[in-house]
Length: 418
View 1 (spheres, rainbow, N blue to C red):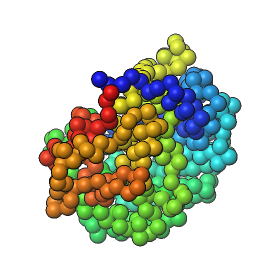
View 2: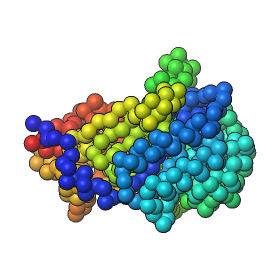
View 3: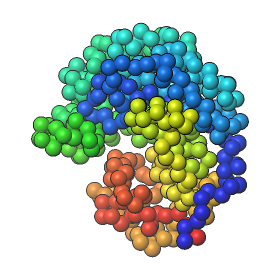
View 4: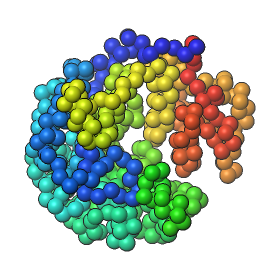
């Protein structure tokens, strides 16, 4: 039978680890047609009420995670650049009060390139933000209009310059594999992106998420997404050009100059603890998954009623945690160290090689390429070509891997159940 929740000694060991803090600001000027994030449009926002509620929610989490060194803060959304700088400053100050902080504390804020928001970058930097992640999404006005973005290409470049003047560390996002995208066009876009003087790029392929306006449009045949072969070719081109340009991929969609990786996001993918605060925020707290109320009004009511915005807390079994850690870790170019991860999470092993070989005595193939695991000493990674098709297992109901013939499931790649 499955083991119990993560052992108390495992939890005790975790209390010596560093901590990341995620703060969700749920408001946007408009809802983009591709977006399935927890974002909301409201005619007016009471900044003082939201500052007080976020501070209360933060205090609740801090009380349950005492004495942890805080390594990063990430303001996500929504559009956190709509937040008053004084609100960001109050949250940063409270975090310093609640926890000892790393000398190189990374404080990231996601921002849109609208001119009104870009005007706040200097004030946000004075509030303590030292890294800005800018949602450029495209350098082309027609693509921006298709994506429902509220800024122009010119505004985007102006905002990027403002961000670079305000803070030393800047990243920006681009969305590619749009209908009609070509290798030649995307190559030119990437070359321009690589020459803009930032240290980090997040390059996302357009995906049609259920419940979005794009999903409705596709169902009505209002446009046709780019086919998978063309998307895969663009992905491969992305890996080659970014590597040649000094921005190797360290995660499926994230590229950075060596040493400029997002430390906050690495905490997620390396399966470390993080406190999640604000509407819809998820967290991972000493073997427990936490979820906040998504709807802003429900979140505010919960904080008033309970002193926090939590709607769900679930204790993870060791096996559940190990499955999550495996999936998250294999997003990274560095892969995972199975033995070290198994020891940290209190399971016998992460990958059962004997069971794998029982079901797969010869590696299956994908378009003529061997589908097999690349194992270096104490290291476990997937070959590069598998990343081209990472979505093939993302929604697998078993929560593990599935190849094109459904041969590789959590029965073949599993965590030992006792």
